[in-house]
Amino acid sequence: MNKLELQKMANEIRKDIVRSIHSAKAGHPGGSLSAADVFTYLYFEELNVDPANPDDPKRDRFVLSKGHTAPGLYAALAHKGFFPVEDMITLRHIGSHLQGHPDMKGTPGIDMSSGSLGQGISAAVGMALAAKMRGDSYRVYTLLGDGEIQEGQVWEAAMFAGDRKLDNLVMIVDNNGLQIDGDIADVCSPYPIDKKFEAFNCHAINVEDGNDMDQLKAAFDEARSVKGMPSVIILKTVKGKGVSFMENVASWHGVAPNDEQFQAAMEELEKAGEALCQM
Figure 1 (cartoon, rainbow, N blue to C red):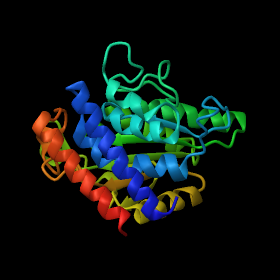
Figure 2 (figure 1 turned 30 degrees about the horizontal axis):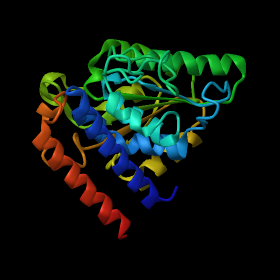
Figure 3 (figure 1 turned 180 degrees about the vertical axis):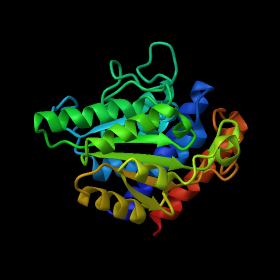
Figure 4 (figure 1 turned 45 degrees about the vertical axis):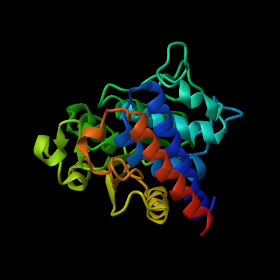
């Protein structure tokens, strides 16, 4: 896809995030929307995955360590063709394969069940180590929240990855600056994020605008060029990106929009899509 096509897809993914969380009457819109662009870039540019063969042993792996933002991942998987887009409105419903957090046993395209913050990265590190031990060429990607990296297990995993020189591993931090209790700097500051990862022998890539496709491309291209150490891409993003009244508002971390808010959000995203179609 070219840049414009990726932007259009990200907007569609945002619409499905809002639609699914409204239908569920529960979920996490803020962090799902901030990561919509990286979900789009991963599944439509970066990852070697095939919905016709979701269990291909040669496929790249993706672990959503911040599992509560599953609506964004589900939307990307649906548009990629792993399951019907219409399934999005069944989010969190009884009997649905789209639960509140990713379930590798129930949802096509999910490589690891996740949701307990700090644990997903450890699973990703294990996958990357397995590839090295077996001589496989697949790459492993994992997305963490900036509030999530307050967890000690994250740094144990980063230390291990750096020590084992896992250059087939790309860690991604969605640095939208907000967590459920407010500004991450006020709750328990993880800054400077890049220097912390570098201390564990990881190559840090700072992205000034993690919602920009050109900057995402440059970061992932750089990560592919790194040898002898894992990479971490630190994305400066906007929580709630794409829905103006949700942007940079911590209270939208885990609250579903009511009917009026849903209509306002969808109208805004429809207008954004129309604007992209005129470019």
